[in-house]
Length: 113
Image 1 (cartoon, rainbow, N blue to C red):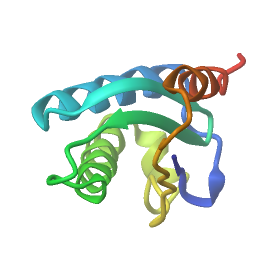
Image 2: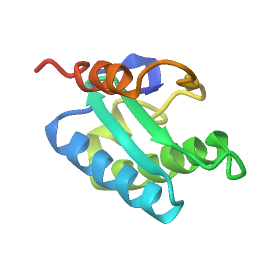
Image 3: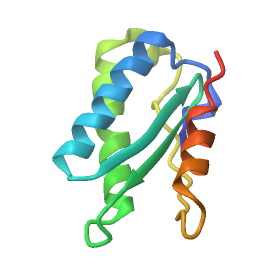
C-alpha cells in the first residue's frame, strides 16, 4: 500500500484506470504476478508475487516513480494540488500462512464506491 502526498483525495476514475494500466505493464515487464490491485481516492493496495531475488523494494520504487512521472505529466491537477504525487513511504507485508483468497478479498473490498 502507498498513499498520495498529504493523503489528498486526488485519484479519480480516470487516474485510477491509468494507474492500474501502469502497474500491470511494469509488473509484466518485471515478471511479477498481480494477484489483486485496487485504488481508492488517496491510496493504492497491491497484492503481488515478486521474485525475492528482484526485491519488493525495487518493484515499489519503479511503480511509484513511473506512475508519478506519467500521471503528473498527463493530469495537470496532480501537478497543482501536491508537490509530489506519492509520499516517500509505503507499507509492505508478506502473506505468509494467510490464505491468498482472504488477502485478495480484502484488497478488492477497499474500493466500495
